[in-house]
Length: 123
Image (cartoon, rainbow, N blue to C red):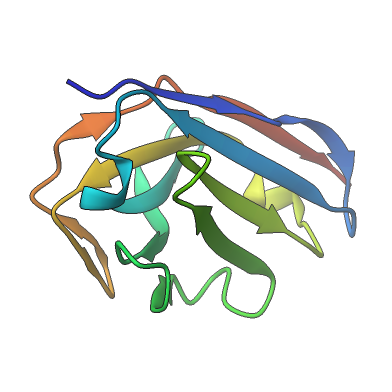
C-alpha cells in the first residue's frame, strides 16, 4: 500500500508560479510511474503530466506543455509539478497518482491516488 500526500497548492495571480509536491510513503516509490491530474469545478478529471520510473521521460497535456514541469526525486519519494505562467483556467484540484506505466495521456495501471491540493489562479 502506498499513500500519496500532495502539498503546495494555494492562491496565485495569473502569470505567477507554484510548485506542487507529492510525498509517497513506503520504500517502493521508484517502482511506480507517477502522474499529475486535475479537476476543475464542474469538469471531469484530466491528465496534466506523467513521468516514468527513472524520471528520464516525461509527458504533458497540450494545455500545459511549455509551462509545467514534472520531476521526481526517488531518494526522497517525492514527485513535483513546477507550474509557471499560470492562467485562470489552471484553477483546479490537483491530484498525484501512481501507476505501472507513464503514457502520453496519463498512467496505465492506475494504482493509487492522493487526496488533492487546490490551486486557484486569479485574473
